[in-house]
Length: 108
Image 1 (cartoon, rainbow, N blue to C red):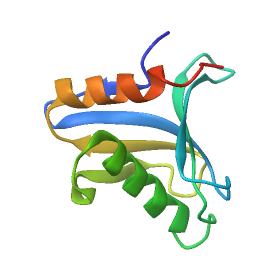
Image 2 (spheres, rainbow, N blue to C red):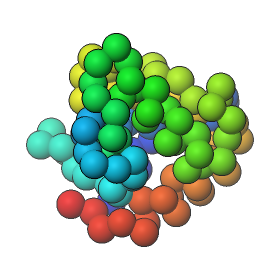
Image 3 (cartoon, rainbow, N blue to C red):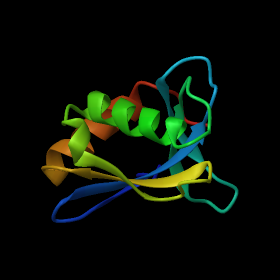
């Protein structure tokens, strides 16, 4: 399966699909959208209001890949379920961390 992130000199840009009010903060693995693009499925307890869910997503990803919260930011999709999230750091290490995260979950 293709990866849901792109590498850059600064780190990685991750395509995510967010489920707000998902009952728990968790990464549910990879999913392929109807147009064939892979995304990382993320669920958060926060509601999609005033940026609460976006903040929860960036904090969850920072913790999951082991970088400070300041290294994770929203690139696009502030009001959409489909988002692009930038994670700054060593691209190779971030790619490995993401691969481990989604490998433990079944792809849909």
